[in-house]
Each structure stands twice: as C-alpha cells, then as structure tokens.
Length: 270
Image (cartoon, rainbow, N blue to C red; front, top):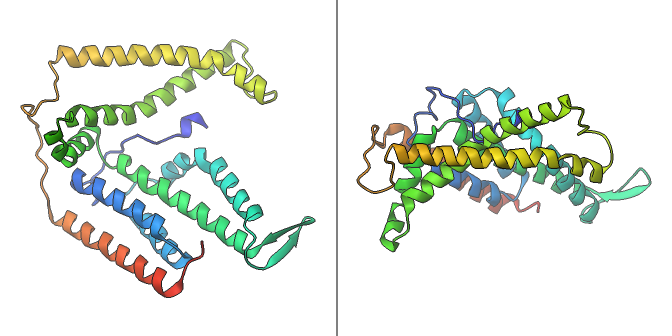
C-alpha cells in the first residue's frame, strides 16, 4: 500500500497538458478545485468529473498509476460516505439490515465520494505533468508581487517544491525500513490498534534520522553550488504564454459558466 502512493511524482511526456505554461497550470488547477466545490448537483459534478477524466486522457498518464494514487484515500471515502448515509435524514426512508437510511443520505454519500475523487485526481495531475524545476519557477512568478512586502518568495517556492518532491523519496524509505523490520521478525500487520501503533515506532525513528540526514545533504549540496534565491538568479528555460494556455483558459471558463448555469436551473443536492 505504501509503495502505491504516487503523489509528488513526475512522469515526463509531450502531451498537451505537459506543454502548458507552469504558471497557467497552477492557476487552472486552483480554478478547477474551486469549480469542484461550486458543484451543487449531480449534473454539474458529473460535468467536472468528465472534464477531469478527459484531462487524464489528454495527459497520457496511465489510469493504473492514477488509481494507485487513490488507494490511500479509499478509507477516507468510505468513512465520509458512511457518515452521510447514517446522519443525513432527508429524503425517503429505506429499511436495510434492520436499520433506516434515507435516499438523501445515499445521494449525498455518492456526491461526496465523487467530489473527493475528483479533487485528488485533479491535484495529482499537476505534479504528474509538471517537473520540479518548472513548478518552482511557476510558483515564484505567481507569488512575485509579494516581494514588495519583503516576503522571500523564491525561498518559499523552493521549500514547497522540495517538500512535495520529497514525498516519493520518503515513501520509498518507509517501504525499505518496513521490509528490513519484517526481515528481522517484526510483526507490523497483526494485533489490535495499540500493538500495531507500537510496532510502528521502530519505523519512524530511522525514518526521522534518514530524513534529517537527507535534508542536511541537500542543504550542503545547495550551498556548495552557491544557490541563493535572489532575483539575480537566471533560468535556462524561459516561460512563455502560448496558444495552448489560451485554449485551456477558455475551456476552464466555459466549464465554470456551465456549472453556474446547471446549479441555477437544477438546484442543489447538498
């Protein structure tokens, strides 16, 4: 399960989404996330869900990889849906297994599950299709107005990007430590919750030690290369706005207009 986490990984490609300007890609991601929260009925949510699937197809990222990244949120989706089913009392009552649920609870549970999946799906596509360097440059450019307030934008962008890109490294480290502990006879999967929590202590201690060591080595390497986040730092690749960014902007705005119209004419489910 740990090894299936794909958040933070980058998959090189030459698709339409890969070639988008990183600045616009960040803006589009925020727009789509806002649109997901604006959805109030199944028509609008279905529209944004189909749009997310279309983006996945255009990006040429394997759906097997994307579904592997969703494995870690299955439990979250299950509990969220269960709470909606048993605590939402709107709609027609239905008797099942000796208890009562309502159609409103079922509809809301499905709605919330699709919304969570769409959020993770869209967020993952950003890191899947954007290299660490491009993501850092895009964040710096978008946050550059904050420099007037003497906020170290370059340093913050680098910190966020490094933190995001360290996720796959830490996941791989956890997987190696768990295998090493199992080889020494550690039982990490059996017993009650308290015993399983205690069994994780031998995993987290070496994980923290290795994480600090990696952070120190990275900082030392950056210092040796005279890295600093000043404005005088040049970039090998310049970012330019192209026709792809304009097309993507128009599509995102059309989706937003369609969601607003669907919410207005068909009302809200939740």
